[in-house]
Length: 415
Image (cartoon, rainbow, N blue to C red; front, side, top):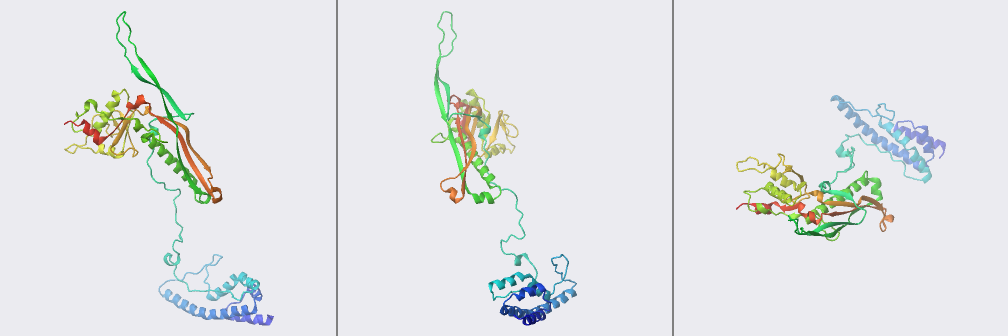
């Protein structure tokens, strides 16, 4: 384009916008195709007409607000100073801001021109300006992950715990004793006794759990690895706890305490107690263990049964507190009460828990690795496991008594 023609187009643009075109903008405009440059000028003329109308409306609005004592807040430019930017200045600023786009049009032979859009100012509201779920303003998120609430394991706190190097635990115990000591006269044969020895054993069993997780999740979610490890630790410990209490000894199950405990036997207290309650049943069960020459160390109950004992009242409404029970109900005849939902409601277990032995061949361990095509799919497997054995020697079975309150209260109820 001839210099003269270019200068005429610039003059038309300056007249349309009411602002002098910067030298930098002019330099960029020179690079444009003449046809495109003409389009830019024509767009400027069209904008001028539109902007003049908007500016009139803006002036009327400003005057109306002033009558109400309301001032229009001035816009702040990049330097931080407050200045009201006219619509004409906005046009020129739009051209300056789009220098790079104007230059690129030369390289791509674009005929599109540069679109400069203006709109009237409006109130800004969250409801009308924020896209749904855009999370503006930024939410405040608590750190960490809220875990599912599970019961606390408790059996390992009561029993005898140790380690073992073999996968088989053996012990020798006395069985079938015969004869007895006797008072013997001079010259008379002394009393003879004997007994047999029997070998008993229990095998180490394994408890396992694993979680498969993508590398992306491990990288992108804060604390996820620690949460996975904690989850595995929790479920393994709960499984161990349940097995030590109620394992039936079949297959890969441990033989739990309940499998070896002696059922409730009231003995001389059968049909001998007037209006018995749960505390009476526990007192008779303690007596049963004492008669078997053991001293119970713990009573384990469901929390609801503990509560029921605490709420028990006589017919006149006063609370019942047997003389063999502590005021807070946590000790019965010197034996502490442990409450846990791992025990079924309505059932109880009393015993000398030192006679329950647990040995760990391998404590809780964690391993991380790949399985099958995990490597090509970016999956990682986190595995937790423990190996242990449990036993109650047959000579110590009477050290534990188990029962159900409803059934055992009937067994001791006086007619």
